[in-house]
Image (tube, rainbow, N blue to C red):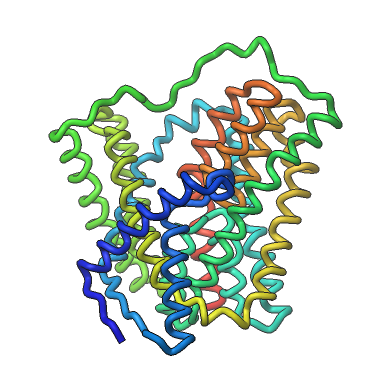
Length: 394
C-alpha cells in the first residue's frame, strides 16, 4: 500500500482538476455536456485506483483531511451570494420558478427513497440519487455523501457521484428537445419588444488585495460562526445539521445585513473566484478518493432511480412548469434551464438556454431568473429537504 500525505493529496487534487480542464477542451462530448473538470480528473483517478486494487497490483491511501475545509469554504461563498435584492428583480416569475425547484427537490427525494425501499436497499442510498445528486449536483453529493458515510451508510459518496454524473449528461440531453417540442406545438416566438437590460451583479468590480482580504475575512468569519451554530443546533435538537450548512446560512444573514449597511464591502468577483477554486479542489479530492468497486452491486438500482428522475422532470416541465411560467417563449427557455440544473448544475442550465436562444431567439427573463435561482436560491429549499430526509431515515 502507498500512503499519500495531506499536502500531496491536495497537489493531486489540483493536478487532476487541471487534467480535467485539458481533456474537456480536447474532447467535444465532455464540453458539450458541461461535465465539470474535477469530475473528469477525479473519476479517472478513482477508476485507476480501482483497477490497481482489484487486480492486486497496488492499493493507494489518500489523506483527505483538508477536504472539509474546501467544502465549507465553497458553501459559505454560496451563502454570501444570496442577496434578497435579487429576488425582487425576478418578480413573480422568479418566485414561481423558485417554488417549482423546491417542489422538484421534494419529489426527487420521494422518488429516490420510494424506489430504494421497493428494491430492498437503504432509503438514504435512494436519497443520494434524489435531490442530493440531481438538483444538488456533484458538490452536494460529495458533501452529503460524507455526512451519510459518517452515519454508517457505506459508499454514499460514490453513489452520489455516479448519480450526479448521470444527471449531468441527462440534463444536457433533454433540455433542447423539450424546448423544440414546446416551440413547435405552441408556435412560440421571442418577444421582440423586450429591451430592458437587467444586471444583477456588478461585472466591473475590480479585485484588489485589500478587497480580496476583506472577502476572506467575511468568509472565514461565517465559517467559524456557522460551524459552531451547526454543532450547537445538532446537540440541542438531535437533528443532524452539518457544519457547512450552518456556515452557508450564517453567510446568507451576513450578506443581507451588509447589503443594508455597507453593500460596497461585498465583492462578488472575489467571492466567486474563491468559490470556484475551493469547489474545484473539494470535488477533485472527493471524487479521486471514491471507491468504485463498492457500488458494483448497486448499478442497476441506481440506473432505475436516475431514469425515474429524468422521466419525472420531463413530464413536470412540459405539463406543469411551462404553464405556470406563462406558456410563452420565455417559459420554454426557462424550462430548458430547469431541466439542466434540475438534473445537473447551473452551467448545464446556461448551456441548454444558450443553445436554445441561438436557434430560436433571445430571452432576457430566462437569463435573469434561472442563474439567480440555480446558483444559490435553490439551496434554500433543497438543503432543508435533504436534511429532513436524512433525519427521517438515519
